[in-house]
Image (cartoon, rainbow, N blue to C red; front, side, top):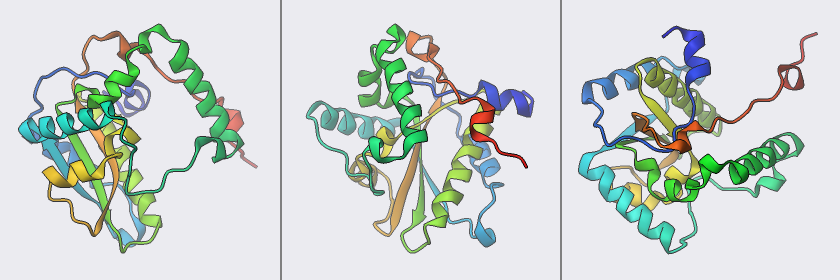
Length: 212
C-alpha cells in the first residue's frame, strides 16, 4: 500500500474481529511510530499494549462502568464541545447528526461500551512533568502508529472512550501515576459489521487552507 493510499484508506473501525494480532507486528508498528518527530528529540512517549486476558479484563470493567453510567475521569481535562469554537463545533455538530441518522450506526453506543471488541489496545502516555507541547508530540506518534498499522493491513480506532476510565488501565497495566494517559488506540482486523461502513466527511480544502 503506497503512502497516499494509506492516508485515504485508514478510517475509524468500530467493530473488530476476535482474531489475534501477532506480537511481532505490534512491535513493528510501534518501532515505525518511533520515527515521529518531537521537540528537541525528547521522545516523551511510552506505549502500554493490552492483549489477551489483560484486554478482556479491561473490557469487562469498562463495560460494567458504562452500563452503570459512571462518568469519565480521563487524565486530561474535558471541555464541552459547544465551547470548542465555531469551526470544530460546526464539524462535530455535523458528525453527531450523521451518527444519529445513519442506520449503520445504530449500535454505536454498544460498540463504545465494549471498546469496539478490539483484541488490542495501545495506550500512549507522557510524563506529567513534560510541557503541554509534549501532547503534540504524542499526537504525532499516535498518528504515525495508526498509519503504520494501516500500511500493514491492521485497522485502528482512537477515541476518548478508550481512556475515559484511567483507573481501569492502571489496574491492569503498569502505567504510573506520574504519567498522563494521552490516547488509547484500538487495533485489530475489522469485522464485516455494518457499523464499519460509516465514514466521516472532511472539510473542503479551501475552508482550512491559506497560501499567500
